[in-house]
Length: 222
Image (cartoon, rainbow, N blue to C red):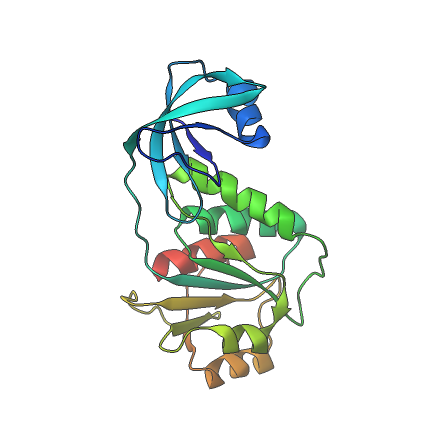
């Protein structure tokens, strides 16, 4: 069943005219026809099944038909050094598909400066959430300094900093965060700063991975 992001969901047995952007995607982009069933999710964990009843003033008119199954994911934070544009876009997509709770871009010594990217990142995450079956969208913040990101993590979060040559570690049961560098990796001072915050070094094997591939592998290892 096709899934669409809608900030507003109909209540049981209620009809609702969806907003213009969602309606355009349903009616024009994907060509859903009246009578077809679709799933709506609000990006905050809410989900329901609806039937497209028709069109009203260019907006899709849907009616609630059932409650969808919410997907509960473990708390995971990705602290990722800023990469080149296409690589960081890939990180956003893969991290969303892997169930990460939040993606915090980090301005590191070897990061590629970027500006005005938050809206694009949020669109990529929303599209990936719709594709993979999530009912929420990961939180994405503007790029910040590493010290600020480390200080913002909730108490009790298990931290892993991924560096070449470190050994593999077991999976985490509770809230956990992964810190990865940009192209060229983390500097010794950045690794030390993470260690002061309680992050343990972790590795991803003997092969050299691209930064975006390393992010996906790190989240899988958590």
